[in-house]
Structures are given as C-alpha cells and as structure tokens.
Image (tube, rainbow, N blue to C red; front, side, top):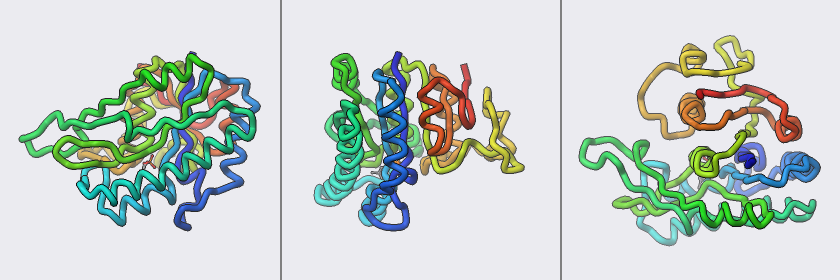
Length: 256
Ligand code: IP8
C-alpha cells in the first residue's frame, strides 16, 4: 500500500538564503527513506528558498496568476533545480527516485467563476497515470510544488500540500506523512496535539474562521488533511524514520 511523504520546503532548504539546499536536513530525510525498506512510496517536496523567492518576484501565488512565460519558467526552473537535488540525493543512497513535474501534468479550472470567489475553490486536475505506473515499475516518484496552467489566469502556484491531498486520494494511499520544521500541530498552550479527529479539536488554537486561507496556513492544512481518505501525520525532521516504520510521531490527523 502506498505511502505519500511530503518534505516541507523549509525542512530541505535554508529559507533565509535564496536557492540553498539544507544539506544536513536533506541528508537526514534521505537516510531515513533509504533505510526504511519502504518501496511503495511517493515523495513530494515544497518550494522553500527556491520556489517562493521566484514566485514573489513575479507576483504569482495560488490565486494570482501570470501570463508571462519567462516569469513562469523562472519559478518552474527553480523548483526543478531543487527537485534535481532531492532526486539525485535519493538516487545516490540507492532509492530509485524519478522526477514528476506537475507543470507538465496538472491544470486548474475555477469551479465558481462569476460568484466572486478566488482559486481556493479552483479544481485541480492532476492525472496520476504516470505516477501510478512509475510506482508499479518500482520507482519512487518525486513531485514538487510548481506553477500549473490555470484557466483564465495564466499559471498559478500549486503547493506541495495540495498535491499530497490529490495523490493520497487518487492513489488510495494507506498513510500520509508531512515532515515540517515543527514537531506537530500545536494547541493553544504550544503543546503538540496527539490526534485531531475533527477541526473542533483544534479550532481554538488554529482559529475557527471560514475565511479562505490559501497561503498554506495550518488551519487550511488541517482541514484539507481531515477530508482525506487516509490518516495523516504531521511531524518534525527527526521523525521521518519512525513514520516510515509505521509509528505515529507528531500529530495524527484522521477525519474518517
Ligand atoms: O512550499 C510552493 O510549494 P509549497 C511551490 O509546498 C512554489 O507551498 C512554486 C512556490
């Protein structure tokens, strides 16, 4: 059964320094994957100091698009450089990793054009035939946050988190792990919550607002993970190994 693992952009890059891989953090994650014995694995990584820097320069976000091909390419090319670093590091430790670039596969279409809402409500189409076939052939597909075609807006950003949710549901994943810089979801006393079964469990700490949070805040992340068919775990960099070994580090999010 498939496991989807997201490596947060701020884990694998040095967020304060443009286009800098955090070598130590990436090595820890790669070592944990290489020694886990898990083969049915899809890896997703975020943008960190690669994607976000270029996206900001070109004014592109999950809602604001661009029709400037050079700007779109600058963002995509930066993400490909990070993806190259992740894939080659995995291969150098014997993991049969191969890149899958969302720009070449995915598209967004607003589901609510005309009623004033923004692309938080846009449907993402992400065909999974390539990822599924790579998995079947024994490879470890490595996807990443990217720019994707967005009908009527040029291209917009798709985050790694959004890809994780689509992959988990589309591949009927058994478990989902999100490795971030924090050891889990915090409650209002800054203690890590063991388990979230409904948004009410953490509403006080995360804010109950229904307002569209398209910037990747924890509230939006928890809501999206609760809606998945698989349980998710949010944990820190030291817990990739335990997660892949079947343990339940950090916060378990299970809305089923
Ligand atoms: O770090 C963003 O991915 P994220 C990717 O998972 C880009 O939100 C292109 C900024």
